[in-house]
Length: 172
Length: 163
Image 1: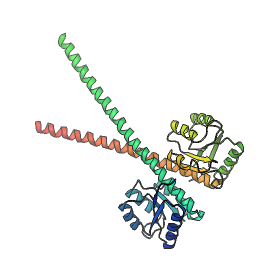
Image 2: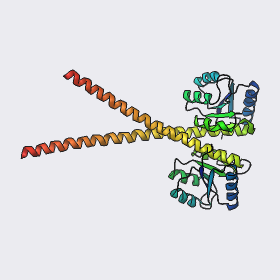
Image 3: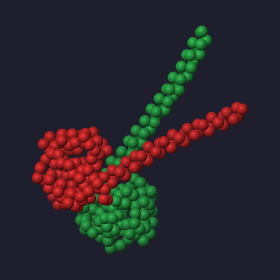
Image 4: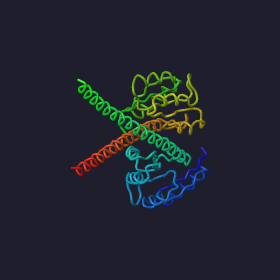
């Protein structure tokens, strides 16, 4: 897996953020990371573009709980999010339902390699999902086009029957 | 995450299979595991009933490599599959690119809690995906209705001008 990976770490602790940044870059030579400490800063950075995946802490000075996931999802639904949190397993279902690709608990002491694997998995899974969404959107429009054509066909048939019957009446 | 889950475990090593089933059900009694030892057995079971997720070993007596995953996905493209393998890193990223929800390497990654979490996450992600699908379909319905309303409104204006 040697694709470049541009990671945005969103973590309010400067020490933790710097540690993650250094250890992830050391573990995966194709990975480059940036660090910001608030949701507002993350939003600005995402808007600029050039981020492949976000590694997101949930306890930020300007967002708590799943707020940050929801905000980023709304802003950039195609950006995969890996949540790294110490809020415990009771929040993981909500995080995933809000659209995050992965939930990792800080208490599980994940190694830098596990974190990079989780982010690469999230990116690939997200790409597959985007393909699905495009295919489904295409399928839906095709199905609707077929439906419209068959309705038109019915109308045509009705008009034709009407014309034929009035012609027959005329003959009589 | 305390909903029941139906897991189909496809693993040809009977001892490994029953050990894994025990590990999973010990960690989470709401997870029901059914076992089968071949791809053919897996496809038969999928025909009979629906499962929440498939936990698939890649090396089976009637298939090897990624063909098992492909066969399942060809027939059940929307069924979440988690790959469980002893073949190391060989297929990790390709399996994911093919649409596997996750990839577990037999060994340190396969602890009871890790497998249960992985299965439950796969199912939740699948539900989110289906919700998106419904949203896409709903969006198209709204667009069609809007187009119809626009046509009706244009027709109404035209007739009003004519009268």
